[in-house]
Image (cartoon, rainbow, N blue to C red; front, side):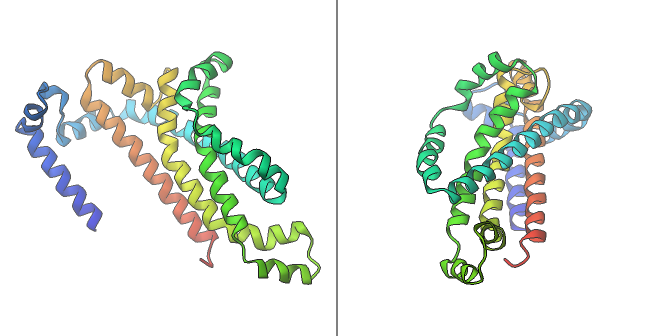
Length: 246
């Protein structure tokens, strides 16, 4: 209730300030550049078909990119957990990879892989890979040593210890990493579409911004945010179903 009330207050204040021209006057802007929430809602309704088509394109890119990030992130975390040599060799490189602005190498990916969905998936996966890997690895390494000692006294193999003790114990932190990845996947998708795309919410935002269609820009941003929040909500529900002991 409290977040909803806060949003209501902010939207109401925005409506009053935009409709009276207070924001435009304060920023010395043309009123057309400062749409009110009512104008944004009107744009959402009028352009619902276009927004739905572009939202589906962006959602598909986000889900596929996240799928690759989860697959490779979990595999990398398990490999680094099982082998100290692998961890020492690769962990600094994984951290260093995050210092490279993906938006800077995205054009190179377009040159290599063309304007299809491939470069977009690479961009999303590269951005989302890090939080999944780091959180999962931290979860695997935080298991109670006494639990592993008990498994060894029961003659459990290394694989059995991983599957029965370490993997379940790491699930809460792995889900946290995936939630972070979901939140930034939308940003990654927009970046990817800015580099080269003919559809998607990022592509629509870029076109509308150039044409000063600010109401539709805000409408596209709203759809993108709502889509991301829905994915985070579904992931939270999945965590409650799977990590029942937490």
